[in-house]
Amino acid sequence: MTEISVSLDLEPDELYRRYLKRCNQHRFGELSEFVADEVQLNGETITVETYGKRLHALVEAFPDYSWQLHHLAVDPPWLAVHLLDRGTHHGPFHGVPATGRTVTTQEFAFYRIAAGKISEVWVTGDDLSTFAQLGWTPGEISQ
Image (cartoon, rainbow, N blue to C red; front, top):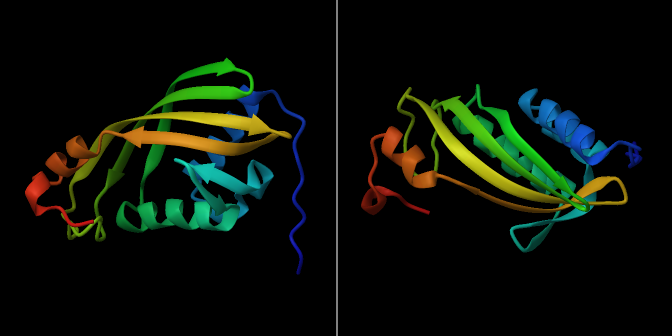
């Protein structure tokens, strides 16, 4: 079965809100509605399928992971977002075995919209805070 990639005719903020809703539903195999077939992620070109798999890997470690939007700024073609991420650690995460602890972390990202889809993402989160909440220090973390 061939998947057809369709571009939505949405304002950038509405596109992002729908994309975030899909992510919070953990429907990462259905992101092509919002994400270009090839997307730049922190300078690396990947497919939308790989993009979805990376998000899926996160929810394998934190099955209830969610992103809560706190701020959204639009300066076409760019979107800037501030998110509060939350999840309970039930699987390995960068070498840290499951702890059962719930973590919250700040995330900041820029998204570039081209042809009605997310085509470039620059994202960073407060990883040190996440590891600290899991009870691990930088010297104990593996890549």
